[in-house]
Amino acid sequence: MIKVIDSFLPETYADEIEQTLTRYDFPWYYRPSINNGKPKIPDERFKYAHGFVHNFYNDEDGPMSSYYPLVSALSYFAEQQGFPNQGFHRLKSNLNVSIPGWQDGQCQEPHTDMPSQHLVCIYYVNDSDGDTFIFNKLFDPKEPDQFQFDIKERISPKKNRALFFDGMYYHAGSYPIQNNARIMINCNLISSHSYT
Image (cartoon, rainbow, N blue to C red; front, side, top):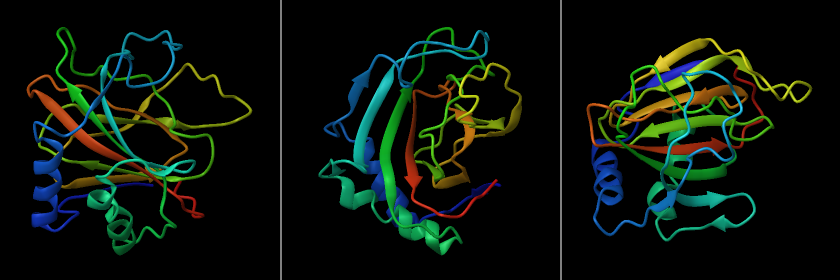
């Protein structure tokens, strides 16, 4: 199951999130690679590149940011759209900036955010390019090293768009070419439902 919902949040709420995450004093933290580790898949489509992250919440530490109250209602709006959940495993935002030489069709390395059942909601904060790629494979703990990936679906960022999918699908983000910045919020939701 892959579902895209436009106008996911009330317009004033979507504006507040965008205005906050694009303020000059919003704390973004640099990471040499948005995905952890080094490239493992020998495929020219998959690249490692730097970016910025802001962690709002995780299972181990609970709320990690004074901005957590701003975005914590995303789980409520997921429920309202028919995605029952018990809150977050992890909630973070990524800021990807344009990278010289990045080409359309390239993306980060396919990955899953965690090796156990969960629901992913990607919320796009601003209008940008830099698609999200969902691949045709599900994570299998018996075969964690996968090397062949075909694209199942490709979703373009759009302000106030939410993308839902089963977190066991391999997926990857990409970087903007036509725009300066791509900002999204990655919600790993606690859910006992399977959405494959």
